Length: 182
Image 1: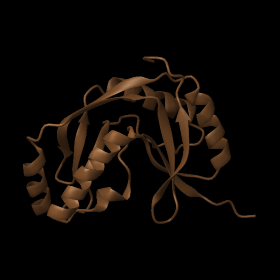
Image 2: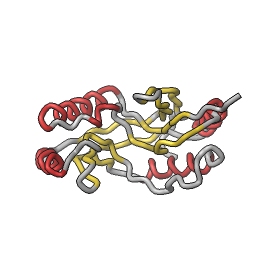
Image 3: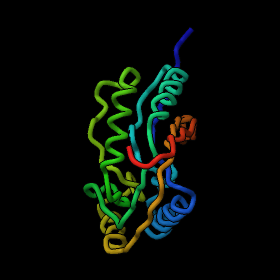
């Protein structure tokens, strides 16, 4: 019997109101500038970038056990940033709680993750990516670089996504213990 591999990633997903605001920004970028790639995923902050996995159920069980030890924390989004001329995103103000969670996940899930998974992350929510040409990037960045944005939410869960061959589906949501801070 052949073992099948699938592609997964782990992320924090903001509450519906923030997800909707981000979706509207992505739609604006698509409609005004023709860059639509970011619409393929809901608003999220990546914790573990996409990785291939064979042992889905074992990973799900192990992630569930790890998450039982995690406590909720606040996330504040403020204004916009970019990576090079390819990605425009919403800034996450305090990276530390998310970086701590990322390190806990890397350590506890090491047996499932490829050895080259990065130990450094830059928490953010992408609003434009991949299909931004240099010209489009300049136009979109000009529009968003001074636009104010602020939102705050309590992060009480993380989400495991699985790629179905065309798009990403939510496979599982994991609730934290509900107490403040790590």
